Image (cartoon, rainbow, N blue to C red; front, side, top):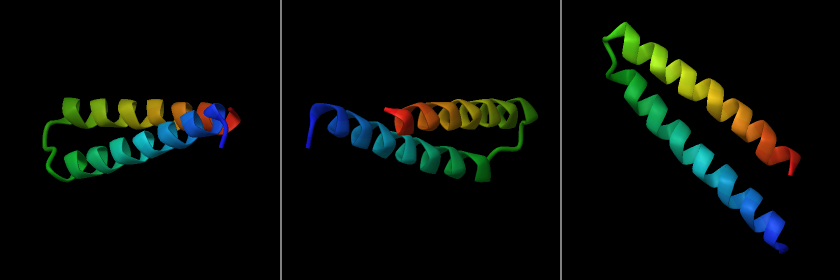
Length: 55
C-alpha cells in the first residue's frame, strides 16, 4: 500500500470511530444546543469523509 492509501484508510477509520461516538452522545442528549452541536459535527464528518474518499 502507498502512503496515500494508508492515510486515506486511517482517516476513514477515524471518521467511523468519531461517528460511533456521536451516535452514542446523541442517545443521551436532552439539551437542544448539544443536539445542534452534534448535527454540526456530523455535517463536518460528512464533508471530511467526502474529502477522504477523493484522495
